[in-house]
Length: 587
Image 1 (tube, rainbow, N blue to C red):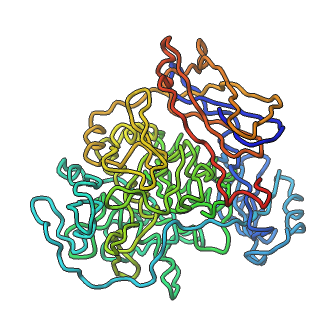
Image 2 (cartoon, helix red, strand yellow):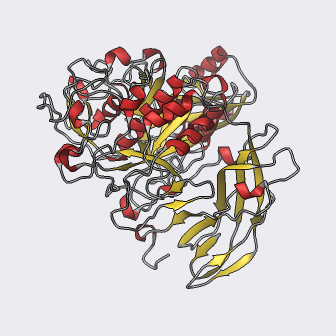
Image 3 (tube, rainbow, N blue to C red):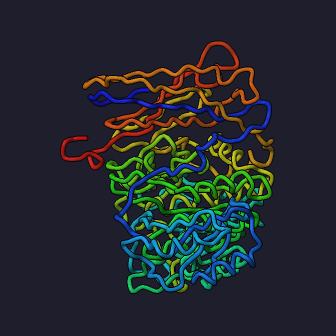
């Protein structure tokens, strides 16, 4: 491990290995329930309370306790085994700058209540750049289209990320290769993707027949109708645009076509309130985990280069429960947009995108360059496509509010739903795929293709098993045809194990130039029930400050089975402090 910056400090580094062994094991103790960040927008408190009971209670009794104290019970939290509930006070303002100590005390006086915590509010932002003017015209059909199995939808010629013929200055054949998946008879049937966003226009003619109402909910307003709230500037069009990328209907003369056009979408409205809370996020990510296969998120902490933030306790627990128990034990797939902070930000600082439980997706433009807003990080698994080229016709064509269409959906907001659509195709091809299988398929079938860093900062490197990786693009662009073909014959991976490799707690001087190398040697828990033979994830936790760059280098050995860990010694940058993160003294 390398750390850079001049200081004397206590460096605490812990490394854990996750991979495949012989006997079932649990996840890293404590890691799943930790908050990944502490960035706040000031002391803001909401009318929501997390209430933890001393034992599991009947729902009717919980309702009675809430009602007699002036609260509304909004339901049990995912993964709490009937002990934790979301209470909302009926008269408190939605947002206030002071804690309501009196209401907390009232709840704590209840003999069955163990803890009552008023929820603080924090900011979550939509990825991408919105366009205030929707389109309602049918564009002229671009040349070079037609042929067998090509959709007739009027906006399909502008969906270059589905079929790139070189239109508008693009690189021909640089696309998601979805036609190859469709040619295999795979279109997303019986798969539901939840769009966790500002709502979905489920009455849109291009979406209504693919809308799964039973799996949908509005956590911003607490009702089963996640329709977007009206604004003059169409700000709440974000979720509807994402939904169309996944499941817009085919050959109906409306807008374009979804990547998985026979799949279903669920609307989870959870981004349209003054502040986000841990409880809203947790309930959203744990909603109907056996009806929903994939959760798509095109949002996250502020992309300002100053924010290090991520899921809080309840949210992290909901995600972990989803991957372990969702889909009847196969695990839900969580797809995350990697972020739009550009060079001044780092998606390693986003605890959602950087999580081992999610699949983080970045974007490329139509000629293979990275987009100007792309962030770099070691956690990005793959890429899809979005806007960024000079030609205005190179945005993402999809559905818009009130039955309209758009060609200007943008940012990594547009990239994540494309990936969700590809994963829906893979799940139709093989419904028995686990959440870990999906990560393996992503790594093995993504292609470098023509992707490149326009500023020559991040290069493609080959790891020990011959796979190329780039800190901008991950393992490359998703290939729907290749993923579906491999999914059909895929055998699920063996159970997952974790091994705690060790920790460094001594005081070290970090030099002003060069690097401090801190080795942690491990035999991957050889000879134990949690021995890791094939590496899937590595988590390194640093509790030190004053660091400019934190990197992880894995060295394999020449003796099996450890040569499979990392014989090529890949170098992953786990954190790079950008200028925006520094204070006026350069700290």
